[in-house]
Length: 574
Image (cartoon, rainbow, N blue to C red):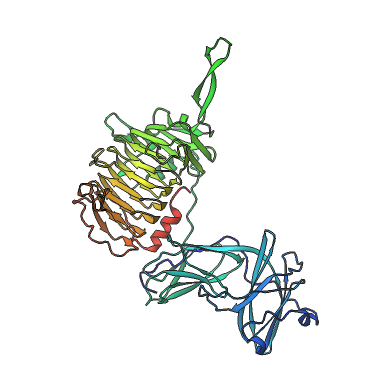
């Protein structure tokens, strides 16, 4: 295996658990072998000196007639082309194989209607040996994982079974319809320079460091990410949250601070507001306006206990949620200053017309999922899930998921600065983050944005589109998008470091091209790229950001597969 292929060869997760062993052996009656079919001869053909005789049973012990059975050498690895033939048990679940001495894996499948069950039995045969066993079938399971691809395509196989999978463009793979149990999983590059086989146990998360083919392959476990916990009105939990801010948003205090008329933020403990309903506006009778028939008019009022009521409170407010749910905004939620909207410990989904800041400051958005909006038309009139506008500053977006939007999911523009977006997930849109507007609309040299440890996937254009201003992007993962991961255009200064780009084009330095496809020179940006991992090769000539480099303290991890995997599994709402 080439050293650039992958560092994490796989992260495996079992969907169903179980053990590989079949039930304890039970000797059949003397008439069993004569009753079994011999159509399933494998391996040694008619000259085989040993026999395997099985009865297949369902989980409740009833015979599993007409089950499909096949036997392969225990160390068999599929080549992706040939498929081992299946034989079938008789009405009573009996089946017999003849084979040469050796070690074998016998796979059994039974399908009745929409119900499927299976098992795998490992058997060793000596010369002139007869193996007799009962196999009870169990639920089917799946193995899934992630391989960071390099210059050589990788494949994943189950040892002893006819399973061959090529990971998708993001490195993700699924091997389904497996009998529940423990399996040896083999990873190999297509050049067959090297491979590694590891044992999968249900529920384990395994990482394999095989980046150096000359060193010993190391297998180790990492803990799963912790789910977020409800803060339960503990201001210490709010302070702990603030300690995690990096980048331009440092100094943001949210509900623990107050912004003065000059935009300066100072400490001040705010109130706590608990959202108790998923309602937004309520339609009520307006008895001050009654028509000639005595029918009262109606009007919309903010629902008591709603997200909108908490968000519109004067003064610093820590907004918490009593229950999980979808909070459908019937009009844009316009925020001004000094709020922490904290969805930790809950599954909080924001739908409808999104959240908008306008000359706003000192805001925190934590552990929220922005889902399908009310406006689904693919045009510029569609509001973003979260819009940070018009000189808004000191805003932190952390562990949020932007899961579906027609055009852009989050935008930061019109002179907004002091913004950090961290550990968030952007998917199923045209562009994840719009930073600024094209120069022919407005020039935005003063806006500033930090993007770190975010995951961009399944986007039809870019992950981040920067028009002017200063962008610092580090330790982000870009996968499965049709255009560049980052567009650095219109005189934007982009410091791009320690990101993983699992796409063909990492960075584009212009926003417009002429009719012949030649970049328009007035739309160029300036990118300084350092320590990134690119699927397409080296970082090229993009090494000039007009002297721009962030002046704050931060810690960027090495852009390797280990870091990419943690971004993949830790990003987004928890």
